[in-house]
Image 1: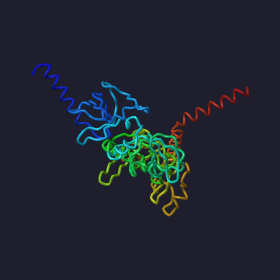
Image 2: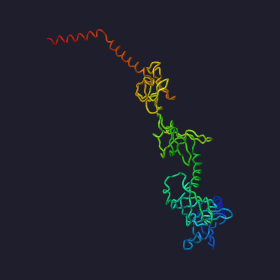
Image 3: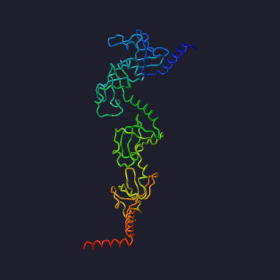
Length: 389
């Protein structure tokens, strides 16, 4: 195959590929190759030219705005039989005929919200007027109807009757389609271990729901919000907050996603083995009391247990009365297992250590020799006699 033949083949192949990719609703560029009385032919790279109504190439005074060779942008309204284009839809200035085509082709149209009326909104689409029910203006229901007035949105025509005198549109239908498409993309990116950004949609007693995009929500349980115990989820996050979370588990069958926040923070237990060695005396705060002992918060995220046998409380005593929640307590570390996240503490051990120190100090004093004690006494007597002279 010669070089010119190869170039011709590449052009034909490229045109064929473009033709296969053309779909209804797609915005494409083309070159005007012929202008007739009713339609113009546009080269869009397919095997045959596309057509566009001649009226769509005229201005408000009826004058042609384009010439042969000009490039235009249009929207594909039909691929059945021939490729039919609409320039008005691309320009957002649709007539009744173009809106009928858009309705048949299920294509979106651009409209301006003129004003709120009873039960919905009056929408201006090109030269036409349409009605949008209040339930179809947005996915999120808002109590202030005026917030949409004057805004330009894309709508789906859901009803077209009486030759265009009765047109009902929906913005919500397009939003839901976009949301479903977005949701599918988001779901493919949600895998265990993934770090994602989301928006807090609601806060409950047990945690918060986070919108990861496209309406896909995951649960951030209160136990996964911080390494320290969280009693009130609203103290950590609030609706509308943008937060970064880690995907902990994905249950595709039940469509449940578990998220974590504390996993993106430093784990205090990673250095607990060094900070809380056996014999270390420290202070903490009573977090809660159980029948078998009292839990002490040594620092945010790290708790230790004082077993009842190390509390100094008699077997038939009341631990809760002896250790009210929120009070400070001094303890000694008995043993630490950072891997299992367990620290065993003792209150009585502090007293035993103090008694041992007192015994040691007394023993050190008792170890002084009699000669040393006598020598010290003799020195004091000698000094006293010298002062009398």
